[in-house]
View 1 (cartoon, rainbow, N blue to C red):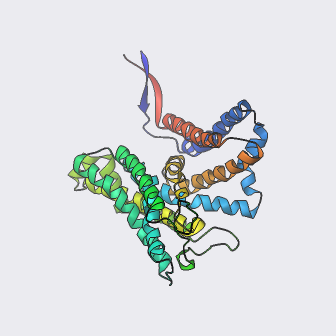
View 2: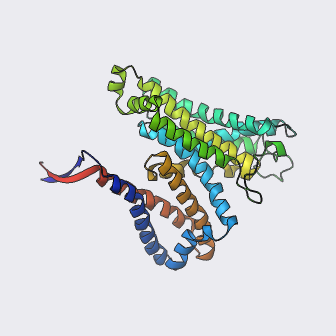
View 3: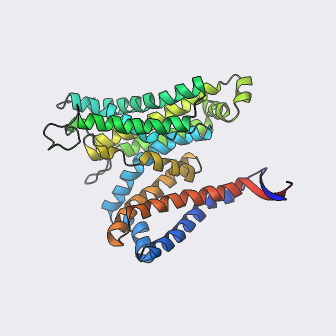
Length: 353
């Protein structure tokens, strides 16, 4: 006799809502023990991690700044995840979006007009979609695993970024730093709150949240996408092609990541830099699952993850924590949530050998 996991006929809604809260508490408790083992005062570390981001409007605005790309990318990825299309390469799609968007100010450093930054956003989305489209082609035509293909393409994107910044797109007046020229004023996103770095990209992310909710919760197109990914045979019988679901899911994820990359270079960075690739594409995977792959849940989880980012920076300074310790908190959060989710959807029974 050995235990087996049997899927429950109906998952508890109350347990599903409480799961992220319990996961957060367990992650914080475990993190406190790790901080103590590292010689850092757990109380001071947790206070910096959770409370410092709310200490002033300046720090809270930075939370909103970090939340923007996480929310955008996670909403795009969640649509694919719910259809069982696993796009793990949003980081590379973000980089390609940043590269495509930067083409306008790099090739025309004095570009002027109201059209400049909207055109950059459109090009960013096209860049992300093009990079995701490579994985969609291989998955639809040759049944290649999209997890491996999208992940490997992220490594290729990083090398392409290095090539451009160390070669043809390198700023000749940049003191040999790997970065492009500074973008002109019309290539920058309008600031949403005066005195902060929060741009209208936050509105793009909120609009993407509303659109994702409408498509996945209230539209036949969203239902068809889910069926195409979850039950390919049933979808084929009903006339829904699995390959169509793969293409749509990956292109949506690529467009969202590309838009996030374009917003980074036209927002807080103001130029194309290596630092455009900061792990947002990977962190958004945690955000998507922590939000239960639901648009409103992702809205909350993206804010929480942004708080941990900004609070982690404060903890590294005030409590002397290494950067790896902060990333560990994010990883623990996902592990505990997925563990809890397993027992929400399944029950443990003693089976027959």
